[in-house]
Image (cartoon, rainbow, N blue to C red; front, side):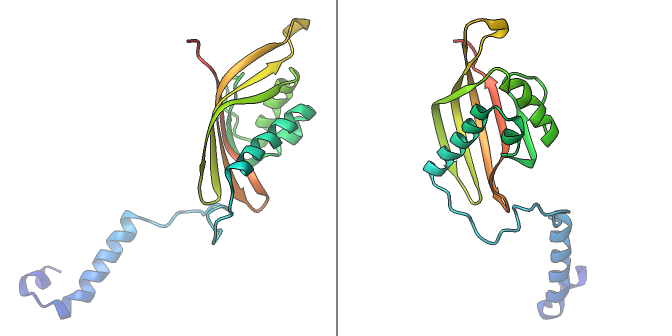
Length: 173
């Protein structure tokens, strides 16, 4: 390559330079080791704000049925749940189901208090604040729990599923 720079013989050196730049590019930006099932879709699945609102309602209806397996089935196999009433991240279907088994024992009834929705290609984000009415502990009166939330939905072979769900108690103030 150095001979090409000094002699300015571009016609002879262009293939050498191009090969060098290409190998540098492959070294700096290697191909991903494993493609995800969602990155192989050649086109975007359209989704509207109303449909994203419906995805939350589907999740909330599954909570109302009290079936942890049904709720957990709404999450993708590699989802991450950062739950409201637990300090443990849940990153397997079994761990997500175990969290909801405990949460559903309080008969939660959720409602959205505020939200922002962002739409993308085969993904959607729904974030804001929500509240849950929970049955009281030890037979006490029902209580309201206010929290901040983020749902990231992805579209894959099984339709729209929750890829990431973060829910944290609303701080006082």
